[in-house]
Image 1 (cartoon, rainbow, N blue to C red):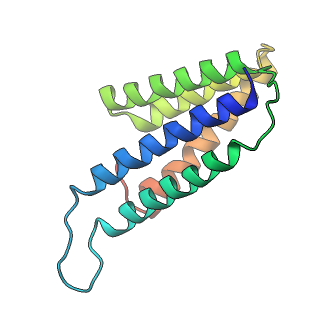
Image 2 (cartoon, rainbow, N blue to C red):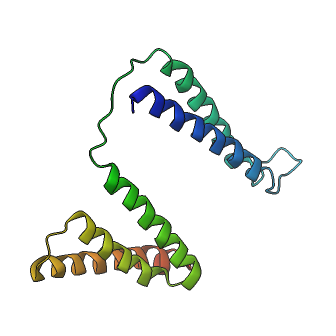
Length: 146
């Protein structure tokens, strides 16, 4: 696949996403007074996304047609699949921190497949530390529930 086609497909997808985001933000409550309502910033972000992607889409017609080597395309697709599975499991079981810990372990073993006790121990420690930092930051400091 070449750069121009990939870029145009991605930009067009972002424009569609921006339009859908704007439509979704239209359902948020708004105020009729001079103050900004809950819909103001999401609509503003959607408009900025659509405008900037449209500008880049127009500019991309001048770009050269370069071939792109997808060296890591398999890893990217598997990572996206793992993220989707993570979100579905989180939604299904509502155990964010446990699922995040497992997700980090699986991702680490996928990207660095060399298996030995030292590597598993390091992955375990890193996963625990990252999960603990996220818990302390969001669960304790900000009092957010996942």
